[in-house]
Amino acid sequence: MAGAEAPAAGRHPDAAPAIELRGISKAFGTVQANRDISLRVMPGTIHGIVGENGAGKSTLMSILYGFYKADAGEILVGGRRVTIPDSQAAIRAGIGMVFQHFKLVEPFTVLENVILGVEEGRLLKPALARARDTLQRLARDYELNVDPDARIEDLGVGMRQRVELLKALYRQADILILDEPTGVLTPTEADHLFRILKNLKSEGKTIILITHKLREIMAITDTVSVMRRGEMTATLETARTSPEQLAELMVGRKVLLRLDKKPATPDQTILEIENLRVTDDDGVERLKGVSLSVRAGEILGIAGVAGNGQSQLLEVLGGITPATGNVRVKGAEIDLTGRHSDGRSRRARGIAHVPEDRQREGLIMDFFAWENLVFGYHHDPACQRNRALMDNAAIRARAAEQMARFDVRPPDPDLAARNFSGGNQQKIVLAREIERNPDLLLVGQPTRGVDIGAIEFIHQRILDLRDAGSAVLLVSVELEEILSLSDRIAVMFDGRLMGERRPDQTDETELGLMMTGMRTEVA
Image 1 (cartoon, rainbow, N blue to C red):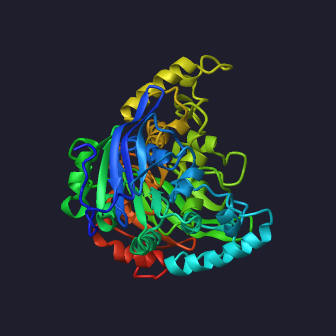
Image 2: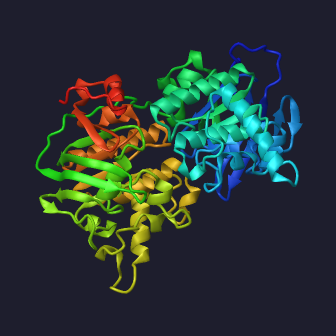
Image 3: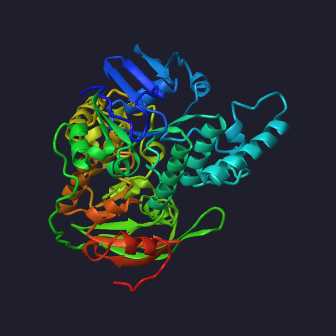
């Protein structure tokens, strides 16, 4: 069914496709990212593209946006053959793209980012005035309200994504490509984004949505294409398919969409936190007297809207941020402010940390996979030939074994971290931390931007660690993930714990209310 076309829902069958790709191929060295791909996207529709990490989705869209040049094939926009050597050519063709990792200049304002590259003349002041008027109209028409004078560095991820959409619309894009748009959004922000996309569709815009979340595909798309290992395997009407069918087409096997886990058997208390407080550089208190505990053989999930103290909690426990209060691991006090409060000291105490942002905090993107797989543990005797030299051969061999066990694709220890897809980058971080069999695993957003097959794999590895007797502190904005993985759930709001629940005695509605600060009777 490669390149098969599904009828566009509600559109005239004789209309020219908004986008048509014919025989697109692209290789990076020996890696064939795209192989003879054909695709038709009809105007005024939302077309989903799904596939495992490394399936070639982002490469294909980057070719369409001019970031890469295809080795073979052709592109048609509105029935006309076009050449897209760079992003400026894509913009001229009416194509805009919102990347998974935003392309914004953080010290600049919203307004400055929107007009960057399309300033229209030598004088900036008139261009800014015209852009401000246009921005106000776009914000009103598409529910994209954001302060034009706010600096990007002061905005949350949801607002930053709105700025990226405004950039594309300001450049008069009729075709919008969104790469994993909800990967960093809360459920509320994701719902708002979907309303925006439906408004854009009603205005005649064409939207290509790359996502791993099958629930989102089923909720918002008209048609969906499935990619696997660089090839297009099927294109279907969304209304005529199911999450189970799409998952099997993506992975090439049946996938368990529901986690099958046995009951926890908690043992001794591993982590104890009492009255933990954190104040940031601006004098704002981010953690306000947090107290909790986690036992061996259980997963405590922390639910909450991003920005309510969960990140600071992980950073304190991981040795990144100083704090006041008391933290004990296996009964021994942890230094929160002194010279033994860093990550190395935490690792020596049996604490492993999978940070929320793999690219900023979990990896050094220009370094090789084998180097990233040993960072933080390079002082271990097994990694050293003698006290002066690292045993690089042994580290490489261990890295290859870890990559095989965690199904990292491609399994090449000498490939730079930036050349792996997001899900495979996440597997590298997880392999490094989980393979050490820690007493306590701190894990933030474990499956952010990860495909359905990899989600199943990652969840199972976390459960295996729990069942082997480790304590796990899980932070995730995905309530479905929190409910399926956790043995106990604590909800955070405004730096405080709002209460604790068992997954079998609550639901997303109750947790959502607690996440907004509405107290319910504490269990």
